[in-house]
Image 1 (cartoon, rainbow, N blue to C red):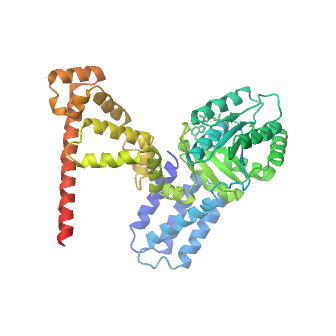
Image 2: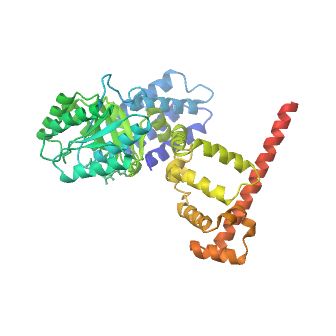
Length: 442
Ligand code: GDP
């Protein structure tokens, strides 16, 4: 999971800080030394770390934090604020749209960074936000690149413009933009060629495309897992091409976080999006404040809520919660509910967003397989059985177990848990009714 090891170490430092009623300057020094080590081990740029620690030190001593009532909390607050500042502002991380559509977003980057995948992820995400994107295949060197873009474009339901591999990328880009205007697509995403290393020819080609298409955004796609390499690549691309922002991919596999924490400070350019998995829905707008909270183990409840909002049908959720509180909540509802939760993505990814959960995740293996088995068992029941589990006699149970490849024990356990859940819900409804009454009388 992203930032896991850094987050763990910082939380340990914070735990010690919180536990102290009085904080001496020596304590602070020691804590900051540990924060510094944690950041360096996370592969954050050395100079960035040095400046970061110096700023915190200055603020912590200057504001008489140490003599406050909650010195530990105050220091943590300062670290949090400085970490947000390190990654930029919310304002910087938004896409700039052109006054004269179509807005052109040019994606650049080295081979394998995840550019083509990101082109489709962005197109899909922005389409959901009501934009009309078109993808343009400007990588004419890798024959498979055009095909790859067509496939992912189709998966997110976005048109892909291509002219094969015999036309110059500049001409393809220009023709693509024209076509987009004709089709009233307000947004064009150019997928350009990548190389293994930065070379002059590639840079010339990218410069030509930039000059001929005046993109609103030139976003460099870099692989977060390459740490300081990603930072160096960002610096070079920026010097040669003057990028407007960075997109970090493979953040899901980056346990250290060095790139995310250094890029903005080193290049002055904001990170705008992050790729967090191989699936085309695994993309997030980059919010410096939320990211800082995640790194510091304070959770990212906002992103979780957003995820839930896009995945879960609100009317259904309302109806479901009403049913849960009523007496006729049955296994069919239970199954429906599992589907809704599943739409939100892998459970451990979600749990990492809950405050304080990040570091505990290692111990609680999320039992996705167990959930799949539960689902299989319920699916093997008839609708009648799901609605009235009490009709399940021995022969029905044998049939279900056979159909779902489970055991009688598993089935019985599921039924027992379901009963317990119903009892619990009854208690909740009971106490809610009680409260309401109390409220009226009070
Ligand atoms: P390109 O050469 O820059 O166009 O890179 P691709 O889009 O072909 O991606 C290279 C590889 O990285 C593919 O196997 C992708 O599935 C994978 N990839 C891309 N983005 C992510 C991500 O956010 N997380 C993970 N885990 N893999 C990713």
